[in-house]
Image (cartoon, rainbow, N blue to C red; front, side, top):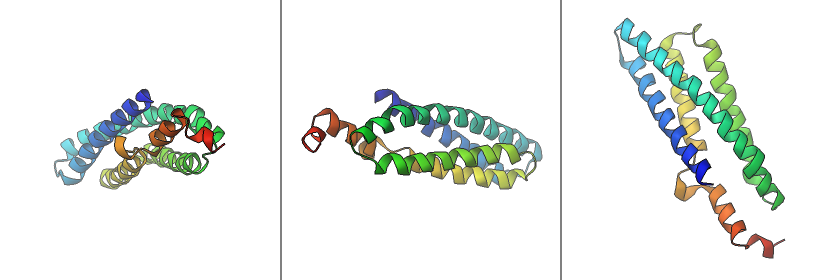
Length: 144
């Protein structure tokens, strides 16, 4: 669980950096600097895609299956769909990045940043860690 939470923190850091670069693209009028910041944002987005895929694969194959075996179905189903949707949007942005205006792409990057922020829960509000706490303490066993 600690590994997943550390990965959540890393994902949030990458999202923040990408948001900063995207905001800079939108606010800069110097074309050379805009291009540089745009390329940096795309690099971060590409890295973020790889990191998210690995992280959510762990969630899906380990944590979600564990929760489903314990009878908790709603959380994995909802998050599974939202994660797939976010990855699909990231893929679309990366594929269309060179065809679209940098400002338009930067706006899409900011949108996906907000979606990823919603997916990555803060430690205190993480329903997955709450579910694991319940199951680890044996509370769920009394309901089975």
